[in-house]
Image (cartoon, rainbow, N blue to C red; front, side, top):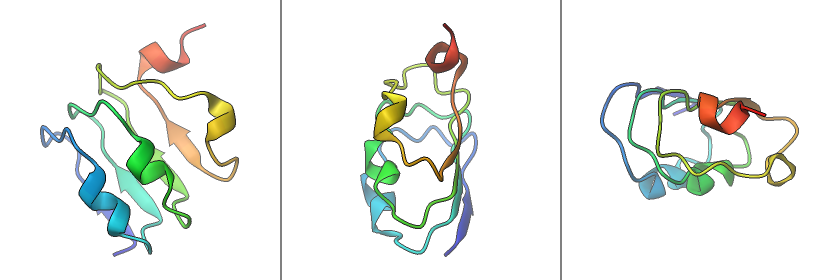
Length: 79
C-alpha cells in the first residue's frame, strides 16, 4: 500500500499504521489523533495530512523529516 485515505474515521491510535513501510501518502484529516509519532517514522512517507485533529500533540518541526509534506491542524501552525 502506497496511498491510504482515512479521513473522518474517528481514528485515535496510529501504532498499526507504522508497519506500512511502503506508505508514501497518508490522509488522516478529521480524526481524533493525539500522537502522530508512529507514522512520522515511516521512511518512505512523503505526504501526511492531519488537519481537523484538535487533540493532536504538536511536534517540533526539527523532529520532522524535511522531505515530508505535512498539513497540520491550525493549533499546531498558529504563531
